Image 1 (cartoon, rainbow, N blue to C red):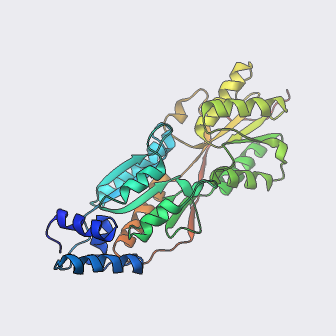
Image 2: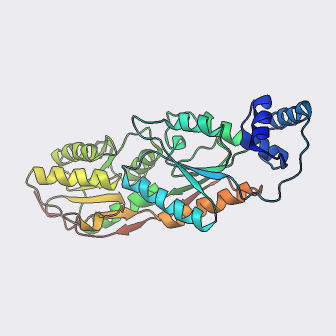
Image 3: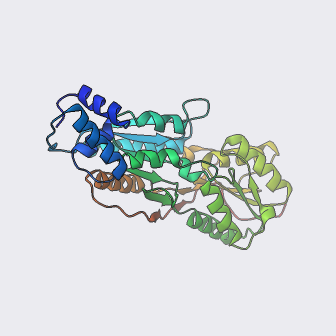
Length: 332
């Protein structure tokens, strides 16, 4: 083993890679491109260092990438991942790539120079059809395994775990139809994002047309704007792409003097904390956050040990939590 961190840094500088990559090559771990491995070994020979294999792969931080903490859904994933990683004896560094702060790409570039053992991405660039996956693949090529939650890209060498958006929409529609609703609308975020695309496709597959889908933003204001258009078009029920959007839809109904659920039924998505205490309490689709976090951490630790992981996307079943924001349809 290289005896000091400074010498690892010397090798990394000589080879033009990160210290994490140097460590993986010196300990003969898989997942490093052959050209990169050759560059590191050439640096070892050029600098005249003697190496011995490490006895443990237990060192190294796990980087968790989330879009922001302001959204309670992302905060729930961050909290659960911290609990699971701590139970596994691993330390976590949280990277919040929110609006106006450090971007996801900047974080990933910085992580190339940090000795991390692996990365977990929640709703990262693989969920964005307009984003490049190059930064993640660069880390993976450097020998850092990656796992993705709620974002799938077939071109990235990682493990993927998502909540089924199609099932979420299907159970929401079935619930509203059981109350007699036929004029059902869908309010989702921008269609560049995979969850919005999948929810829209599942909604249209239920027999609805494009005029019943409104794409805005995953915010209270976005939900309110979408609800305004759907209510104006005569919809008696609205399925929202997030709990935050659902709160905006309820606010729009109340602004018009409408009752929820007497005049308009509203369904959210995520079942984030406090949704049972809103007025009215929100009917929503619950993501199985603990199970998804457990599976993601398990897959990452497997990859860190050098064992193969399945690149196929694993879909988790959501649950519909019925509360007071949905009810029988009434003529308006």
